[in-house]
Amino acid sequence: MSMSVVTDYDRKRLKMFNNAYEEGVRILSQALDLDEKFSTPDKKKDALKLYNKAIEEFQKGLRCVPKAVPVGHGQELEKKVAAMRTHISGAQDRYRVIYNLVYPRQETSTTTSAKKTGLAALWASQAEQEILGCIVDSTSVNLSDIVGNDAAKQALDESVILPALNPSLFTGLRAPVKGILLFGPPGNGKTMLAKAVANEAHCTFFNISAATIMSKWVGEGEKMMRELFKTATSKQPSIIFIDEVDSMLCSRGEDENGASRRVKTEFLLQFDGVSSNPDDRVLVLGATNRPFDLDDGVLRRFPRRIFIDLPSAKAREKAIIKNFELSKTNLRLSSSQLQMIADKTNGYSFSDLTALCKEAAMGPIRGLSRTQVQRASEKNIRPIQYEDLVKAMEVVKPSSSQANQQKLLDFARDFAQRRKVLNSNWLSRGPSIGRVVFAECVQCLFIDKRKSTITPVVLWLS
Ligand SMILES: Nc1ncnc2c1ncn2[C@@H]1O[C@H](COP(=O)(O)OP(=O)(O)OP(=O)(O)O)[C@@H](O)[C@H]1O
Ligand SMILES: [Mg+2]
Image (cartoon, rainbow, N blue to C red; front, side, top):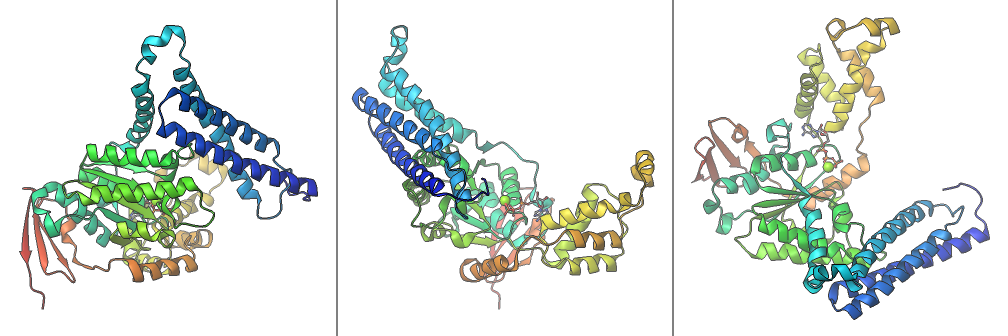
């Protein structure tokens, strides 16, 4: 957007642009409603007219884009321009589909004779195709690749992986929860955890984001949401993973449009549908770094809320070592130096630590001339040292802000589950027997993963 002076003419154009946008969205929503509710040719023809009118309105808006806008309006304008373009292309697609069905060409009359069911089926299958496209077959991430986060791993193991081993044991009071929310500062493994669960749980895994659900359509979101839960139920056991869940299910604001409100309502309805049936094995896994923006109703559907916090000093040590091991880069660091680095990196996230290691790895290269770089091989480059990491800290700083971290801690204190893993040797994936002991639990699960057996044992903790 241009930074030039905003004239009265620009202001007038901005007003016309905004009016056209609002009018276009209004007409398009009407078209979609009509289109979805009715299948008679007359109503379809009316929908065609409305689609056409909406396209014209959006095109009118695009012709009025002002050259300059008042401070603070630029981003909004850009978003609306992008939305208008998407709506135009979506409406044109839909227009073509209906037109061909309402005014069939002679030679295709045999195919369109089934149009009453065909029309609905065509759209249903489009939505279904999109949902099926969100199924992740398998990922290369395992729970053991994730450093720290033991409480989260335990909760996911208990809610997803163990019930899959022996569903008959996890009924009644032990029935797994249907909604888990992973929240915490960026770059600490929320998405990674979800992928690892997908890999290990052998469930059908739907990886969904706001973009998939809201799609290119105003008003199409609810339909996608219905389709999502329908497909997930038919392919159960399944996990619906909604990354950045706040962008789709944030609290209802005044400026919220009807389409996103309807998507939220549909989510709540569908969620309650799967929750009310104890036999349905569909888990909704949400991830966000802004949990405080979530709608109260949505929050209630995620009874287990797990804080994926910044790594502890021990976890930071492990993460640094792991970064160098994985990339097979030479590191020469005494254990006390490693501890000092871990102390100095308080506040760094896992992804900050990865960035730090990358920066440090450039240290030995920076001392070389161009010809030396040309001739050098990995073997004769000096190992990375303590000083490289300290220097890298001047460049790579923690990405989480204090203010956001405080908000997350407050949210965790008020809304998250506080559960401590006292003994986490259950995570060993070998043939040995694992044991879980929870601070406030009087129940222990002895898991023999080799024989796939689980024995609940009651422990009275005094
Ligand atoms: N616990 C962890 N163990 C090992 N590596 C990690 C861990 N957490 C994060 N990482 C590294 O950081 C990268 C980003 O992690 P991920 O995408 O899971 O973070 P996130 O919490 O989902 O962040 P965001 O909130 O920004 O989506 C990973 O690809 C991985 O390299
Ligand atoms: Mg993520």
